[in-house]
Image (tube, rainbow, N blue to C red; front, side):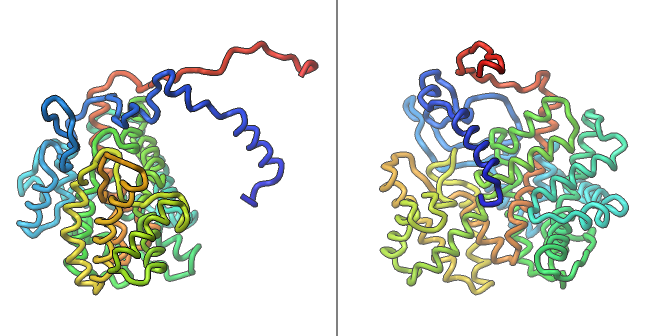
Amino acid sequence: MNYLTERELNLAEKCLKNGRIDPRLYIDNKVNRGLRDLNGKGVLTGLTEISDIISKKVINGEEVPCEGELYYRGYRVEDIVNGIIKDNRFGFEEVVYLLIFGVLPTEKELSEFKQQLFSYRPLPDNFVRDVIMKSPSSDMMNSLARSVLMLYSNDLNADDTSIPNVLKQCLQLIARFPQLSVYGYHAYNYHWKKSDSFFIHEPKAELSTAENLLYMLRLDGKYTPLEAKVLDIALVLHAEHGGGNNSTFTTHVVSSSGTDTYSAIAAALGSLKGPKHGGANIKVSDMFENIKENVKDWTDREEITEYLRKILNKEVFDKAGLIYGIGHAIYSVSDPRAKVFKRFVKSLSEEKGLSREYGLYTLIEELAPEVIAEKRKMYKGVSANVDFYSGFVYNMLDLPPELYTPIFAIARIAGWSAHRIEELINAGKIIRPAYMAVQPHRDYIYMTER
């Protein structure tokens, strides 16, 4: 905080002093903080047909935690992934089609849709030079959001919120997010970080989104089939996760005001950037680097357990008292995305010669819930979430940490787009939750009397 002057710090102290609300008032007035009740259950604020999350089942009139399930438009995600693997093809584009249009495409429809997406990939003339290269940022999410807002200026129908126009805008953004993210990283790497070579690989029509990401990111443009397949699965699993997650709810809220597509998506990006949301996989990676440096024997259960206790006791790592990647706001028994992803992580770790690291991950996945239950006296189960393995995967793919969250965005914009369109079709009112004022009314004091 040494970049702040003494006067700025004093003003901040005044904000802190006069800005705190007694925590008891939230309970006394039955306020659902974070739009959740006291049991952590989300307050029902809308309806959606886009996805469904199951983490509990009613047995004998009581809610009982169960193995987590995730559905896209009624189809179980695990079944979608199994279909993709069975056909030995890439699946992200199919998932985009399913989320946006609500039906699975035929082979012909999917082929035509891929061609349409590719036709939308080219950026406006001189956009890379004038927007991305001239104003590089050390934060790729801010760079991505700025690029999205700048695309507004290149759209002659930017404020048209009719469904045909919004659909076109959404598909253009879905198609362009990989270039905006990768080129933004190269500009940062060249101008800001290490004055490395700046290079641009134009996406190829015959490549999938996952393949193009790796092709554009690497200087030699090379990747293995397994690398591309695992990245594709990551995009599939991150594409959507219900209407209540922070960035998707942001999309609904902002879209309900009647604003343009670019503003709505930029707002969602701002939400996803937060470490409590899309930035969590970076924290998992950082935590594991810290564990690997401080735990001598990666197979010693006692040593690992003791270090996890130190993390929870705020003695080591970032001293926040959190084991990142373990636990989820909704899932308790299991996160279905993590279960699916884990199958492919093992294969990739073997190809990369990182089986020892994979063993450490699986051991911590087993031990961390026990340590958390012991420390927190929790009766609600906790399990590995999708972030637990995604950071490890991105590291094995030699993806720079600066792109971890943008890759999340490259996938999740499919869900955001579907929810924006759903909001515009079905909603008639601006979303406006209520806040209770707890500050007593006061008489104004004239300047001479203060």
